[in-house]
Length: 113
Length: 112
Image (cartoon, rainbow over all chains, first blue to last red; front, side):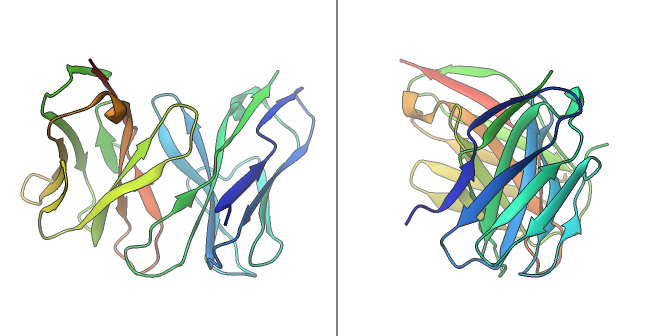
């Protein structure tokens, strides 16, 4: 039982390049989330998926797209990376019920030059 | 104004001290608060949660809600070096769906 896994762990991009961050969970959770964490800003929600087949914008969705590929997998895509997207990205999942504990992955450290 | 505000610290205390970590919130629509702990270069993990109506104790940790002043607190008794981490408070949006709003996080160091 690996919980929430994320790939890659580290990535360096040049401005304008694209990439996809992958996330998978093996807890049979309905809901999945993508956050970014910046110094002094805490965790900010980028996109979330309440259930398979649905996605919604969070607090900071601009510059990102997501795909809920199936119940296990939720990917985050940067179409044209910008230096402002340098951050640590966390994926999380939860069962989607009351007092909904979110379980986080180990994070992806992304630098955009 | 952010919906959840948290003093980022850093906070440095000696081993054995009582630690008080605090958050304020502006939107009164919520059902529960959560405290997450995040070790360096790791993902956050749930430490404890409390419903809007009261306090909760779990070992050395106590979570407290003061609705009149819109203040939530986490107390750590007999702090240990292993408690050194970033502590994040979070509140739900007042619906049954678990979309959370996080504070900025407080960096805590407990030195031997």
